Image (tube, rainbow over all chains, first blue to last red; front, side, top):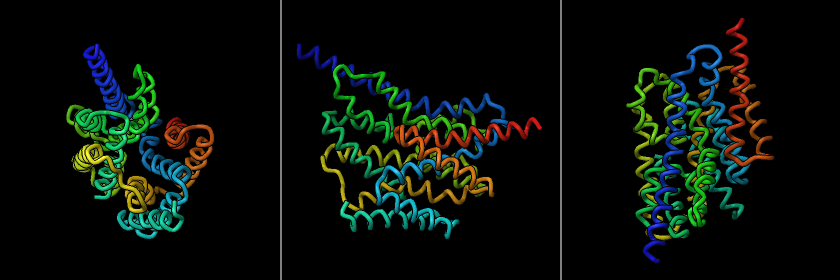
Length: 109
Length: 216
C-alpha cells in the first residue's frame, strides 16, 4: 500500500512538472511562431513594434501599485534617473535599488 | 549582473518554499530547471500539496501569469526575422522578462543579435537553478533591505529602459493610456492580468490606428 502511494505521488509530481513545463514553453514559443503567420506590415506591424514600451510601462505601473511604498519609490527614482542618464541603465537601476533599500530600512517594512 | 543577483536570490526563496511544502531537492531543482518561471512557480507552489494535484488549475494559473510571453515572442520575431524557429528554441526556452528587456534595449541601439538573448538568459537560468538548490539545502531565505533591493532589480531594469523606448509625442499618450488602463484593471484583477491588459489596451488602439492609416 505504501508503495502504491509512493508511485501515485511520484506520478502526480511528474504530471505536474510536465504541465508546468509544457504550458510555460508553449507560451514562450507561441508568439514567436505565430508572428511568422501574421503580416509584417500594416495593422500588425506597429502594435508589435511598440509592445516593449507598453509592457515596460505596464510592469512599472502595476509593480509600483502592488509592491508597497519602497517599490513605488524605487520605480519613481529609477524612472527619474533614467530620464537624466538615458545611455546607461545601471545608474537608474542602482538609484532605484538604493531607494527601495533605504525606504524599507527607514520605514522598517 | 543585476539579473544574476536577483535571479539567484529569488531562486533561494523558491528553494526554501519548495522545501517547506515537501518537494524533494531533486524535484525542486528539476522544476526550476525545466519550468524556469519564478512567478508561475511561486503561484503554483501551494497546488503541489493538494490531493489530488489540480493539474488544470496549475495550467490556467501558468497561462494567466505567463501570457505576456506571447507578446514578447512576437516582438522577438520582428527583431530577428532571419532566425529559424529551430535555432530560436533554445533562446525561447530560456526567455525571461530580464533577458527580453536587455535584448530589446540593445536592439533599440541598433544591435540586433539573437545571441544577446541566449547570452543573458543562460546565466540567469544557472543562477535560478543554483539558487533553488541552495535555498532547499539551507532552508533559509535572505531577508531585509538588501534582499528587497535585489528583488527589485528586474522591475527596476524595465522601468530604467522606458525612456529609451520613447518615439515621440504619441508615445507619451500611449504610455499614459497604458498606465491608466493597468491601474484601473488592478482594481478588479490580479497583477499579472492588469499588466497584460494595460499593455494590450494600447496595442489594440495602435492596431486600429495603423489599420486606419494603412487603409487610407
